[in-house]
Image 1 (cartoon, rainbow, N blue to C red):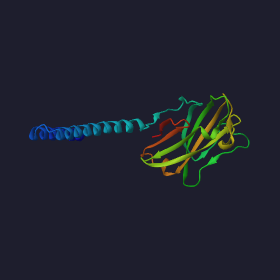
Image 2 (cartoon, rainbow, N blue to C red; image 1 turned 90 degrees about the vertical axis):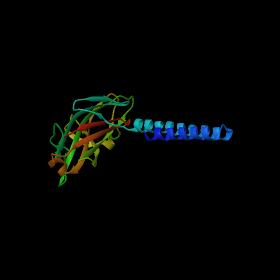
Image 3 (spheres, rainbow, N blue to C red; image 1 turned 90 degrees about the horizontal axis):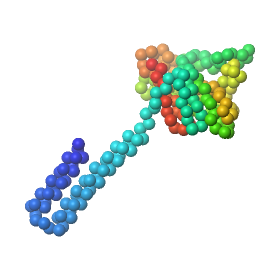
Image 4 (tube, one colour; image 1 turned 180 degrees about the vertical axis):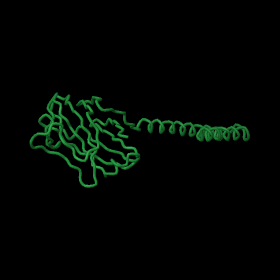
Length: 204
């Protein structure tokens, strides 16, 4: 609205100059330049708004059980939970687990990743998770991988997913315990895929 008023004022002032001072070639050219500059300013403002709108990457909503497909893999969200001790689904006699440190809690994200490529896919490069608690307290996750029919865990940075193979790749987001005990504040996660796409899961 303000830019339209500026444009109108320039046009009006140019008109007054012309009518008050005759048809001087110099004044006509000056008025034309003023109008042209005003039009360019308005067009640039429109472009800036368009660019800002295009660059705003609002995450899509995702729910448990939903599968999304990227260029290189399928991602199926199996579970999102708050846990003080992350265990495999089918614990073996001896298995790796992740107890939270004192005063901490994990946001545990469990996802199946199916490799759609014709070559191996590095497990630690498929996705990452950022948690947002109480509108701005942010925490980042780290990846681990299930192994041997979900009987234990192993490290994502030493694991590859073979072509057309599916592995469970988990993200553990370590947060202060208040994130779990303060049930009145907002809590959600942003799942950031390797291709740049983003998905939002609301915990509460």
